[in-house]
Length: 452
Image (cartoon, rainbow, N blue to C red; front, side, top):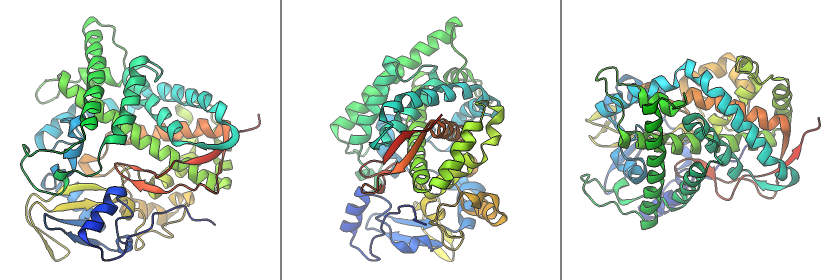
């Protein structure tokens, strides 16, 4: 059986200059092969130290037992602030806790049922858009999965399809932003105060301003609808009208713009990446593709019958294991620690890598193989509990994790019911990780219509 693609690892010893060059091109191939087995690894630079931890006990300590002692690193988040401001993705402490108290109710179980029709509508639209591409010629699927995921966000958040003029403008500006946003900036490597200059390209700042202006217009219009009683009952309305249970205050306009920006960037970008990699894995494994297609065709399209899509769900889980959309997360030690008998200085960077944890050779059976059946065995379930966190874990687990799992299953079922996907053997995908795990030159597959 052909193994799914995996980035080459760098040599064990490289200069700092070469490491930074590799890191700028791709986070994953800048790492040594030993990280797939190590419980912990230390990286030293002239400016700071960082520690990657793959030990499940340490991960639980950082994410679940003492999360307040390991806040998100300001050095990493600095690169996203022109667009995301003080969004829930970047904040820490009491600010973050207040934001989550307001946001979390919108993604509670009952609300997910309410968003389901919008997801189905977005999937139906994606199937229609893909029809002209289903001629058997090589097609880059990444633009299509990005379009579909963005459509889900706009329909569930603001009750508008991506064809809406403002939605289309936001989508295009986000694409420009992702092309200009640097992977690294000075703030990621040199400690310094908040007022220290952050060196972004002028186009990055300009694009971020345009996106925030468009989102501000949408948010202001929704606030007016809420005031006159005409607002639809969607995620935006729910979040804007939910008061903090401790203070009674709701988000103001600027705060809501920050949250909408991260909902779009995180919700759209991660879902698009996950969907593209799942289609690749199904093209690589046509037996599983046939199983998912048969299951999808038997599905009646209802929310209640989602539980019957067992193969689809396990395939999507396995895709998130092999290609976690967010490959690494960075925390900062707020005080001196001792990890595995090693002293960790205050303000050291603590790197948690779903990419390496999901392929940890000491934990997973055949970790580089695509095996959705592992989710149904006792060993596989035990490994999942120990070393699976595509949406992080603990109090800072992604608030949209349940949303993303339903979205992925719904879109996959609709696409696989309509189309067959085949590999383009001379154009295999090359994984690269910047903000998310994408491809270097596109996800090239052949699409054909299924009979009937």
